[in-house]
Image (cartoon, rainbow, N blue to C red):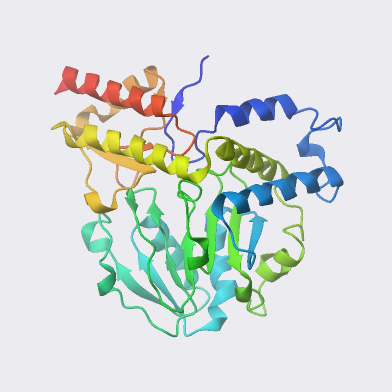
Length: 360
């Protein structure tokens, strides 16, 4: 069977070049006679893989020397707890900006570890917009300000970095990291689950400013202490070695594509043409404020919801899969991360126009 265009929100589509490299190296990496899956994480072979991956990531993002890069496990959901465990002791609680389901979940988990304050909340808009920054109630003495730059379920995205003064800015960038250039130095900590733009599920990246290390609560499990993981180069315990290796291949692929500037241009172009198709139609609708529409996740609904099942079936028959919207919002959702080729977006647009012509 030929490959389909996979619009799933995650685990998401992977670059074909990466899949081919994994296939070619699966049984014998670099003449070692074994798979990366079989290597000791403390051996020379994997140490070279890990070092190259970190070097390429630092180059792609321009990560300053005073930031540590951690390759951890547990997904972004684990970081909902690890962030307050490691940072909350340094202020009078933390401020959270709520713009969707994932920032809500991060807030709920942080409340288990200390005092948190909702600085802004877009629930009233059903998470279709972002609160104006001048209306945020930020506290100067907070340990950190947490926000989610892109909400995958509702398709809401920040196209700017919040100004929070001297308070460290913490971001869940699971669905946007590596999709465009980023001023890493404006953050205190960035974390991201891998299964969108980075690699396969099982790996979590944490990029943390060095001065924020060493402040974990005394009862924090050792393996969850950022300082311990930094001191051991993310190998205090066995890391997700195969996912780390595949992520390194993704970093190489990104460099070959022209880096993050080139990816930003491609991602902008893909999103704009898909939104243009939706907006020019009376058959499809996107509910998000145009000023904060996501480049990565494009939700849309049909004028007649009774056609949803037919739309999804016919799309799948046409090789367009993963388009069903999240159960909490319904409708459709096209996730168009880095690895989604423009040809895939064009194929979706052609199908949408044909479906509309037949059912409008």
